[in-house]
Image 1 (cartoon, rainbow, N blue to C red):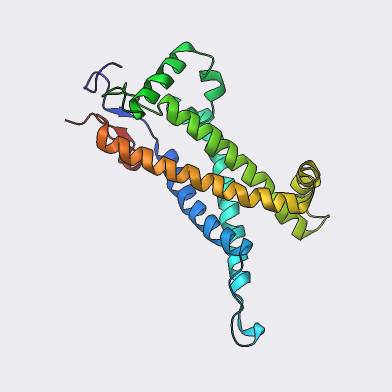
Image 2: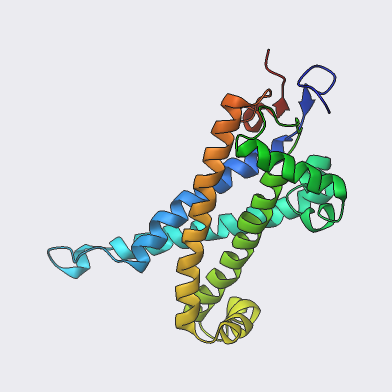
Length: 228
């Protein structure tokens, strides 16, 4: 892959299930971030009788519902990595890719490009090495952590006899030391993922403007195309 021409592109990168997963997870993360922030920093007391309001209940319901969607779609994404095309596995195979010298050469090449030390970067059909590192260490690890701590806290509310408590709370909470530690780390995890989202948005918009191939539209139609 040496030039941004028809010898490399167009290439069908993101299959329909991956694109659906991407946008569903994006919406779920927005709902989780907003409701999670309000749960951690509750709004001021509302006027009138308490029985006339159910604001906090609606916030919790939206948070829990979005959390189930977030967790289920992440699990489906893991499954699709085994049945989809080679690009669908890029999200999870970083530890293996890092054993190859080609990956590190691409990594340093991308870093020079982002630091404006080189004018052009090598074209990548899927994630470039720098993007893959960010996706794995920030998104994948952050998502797994948020799912584990989130369900651990949810199971604590459901009680010791619930399957969620037995599957998550029974070992996650002791591992983290206490329920309060889990709450604090879960809240910090939200900011960790929000930092990833901001970096991700900057990178894709920047690349869509400066790179020689499409970036944003690829997650809409699946095709990466060389710009003319």
